[in-house]
Length: 500
Image (cartoon, rainbow, N blue to C red; front, top):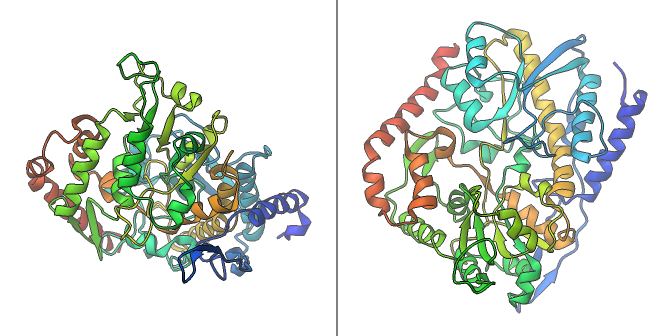
């Protein structure tokens, strides 16, 4: 097996990746201390400078020789037709784009440290076809890296993949597997849906508030970053500022793409705001699932939000041919926009200066900011049940190593080169990005659907706008939803018997 130094391409790539790591903001346990603005005893904001030490989890991994075997991975490199740094999982060559080149370097590193041949198949099948192949004992793939919402759900429903916590060589307690977040996804004692740094897509899956700095300054809104640091970035504040920003610019009395928008929202914006406020539609309590849509505080918040999205100051980014969203964005005629982080790479050339904020809190009493990872963008590692014995152990080892490498190198590459874009390359925006990813969460309803619940809640926010009382909406669904929830728990709890 060759060493790093023996491979000139790998050595050069590692230097590039290490440079990106050094420049990027560090978080998630890679700092000895966290550098954030703190208040002193009289309430003024002071900056604390601390010395940072970078920990690379790959340094602790042991090299192994698997005899040059093919490590066969089925994956995707596009999302809704887009190929961006945070939609790819595989790089066939170097391009000079740091996320792509980090993926290329990862595969060289895996190949050399474990003596395997990395072999990729990129989106040639449907979830149904792959499910059929696995059930027919077709062992064509060792690892599948694909989205949680469609691929993982489909494969899991047919018992085609292992719970990751049943594979001894995957070290789920390590920070690069995000153990606290994965506890939210463990159902019936089994971790089918997981979160990790194995793919840059996790870091492209989190919703943010992109704000127009130029317009914020014109409206005299003050320092938005300080508002976040001081804990004052709330849903009420976002609504207030959105209403202030709305303007009928041409004075024709009609609302269209010639006017100024307070907030653009998209189909998952309501969900991202509910999660940002610290709620869930379905709560995971030690593997048991509880529907929360009779919780008075949650229902009140959702009703307020639905009514807000129906106001003139808000516009749904729903690809309406009569309304040109990019025209408004490029003209800088907006204050807030709620994209997913993978979209940021496609927004480099906006004419206005812009910054990035986390999802707002419900109120200043809320201690933390929460980020929502949407399951169609995030990628999940899945090991098919056709891998058995020593081969399963090897696949687990290699999967674990890919996750460790991703945490060490893909994560900072995305932070620095995708999320911190034009207008946001400063120390304070890096702190905001740290905040976004410190407390990421999922919503199981959007992954598992639970009958019609996910669809009906989406329509409630984007079409109904609160005209229907949420209590009556849920009452019509309650019986079927609760049956689906219980069925899901029993199904995943029963995997132990099937796999044994």
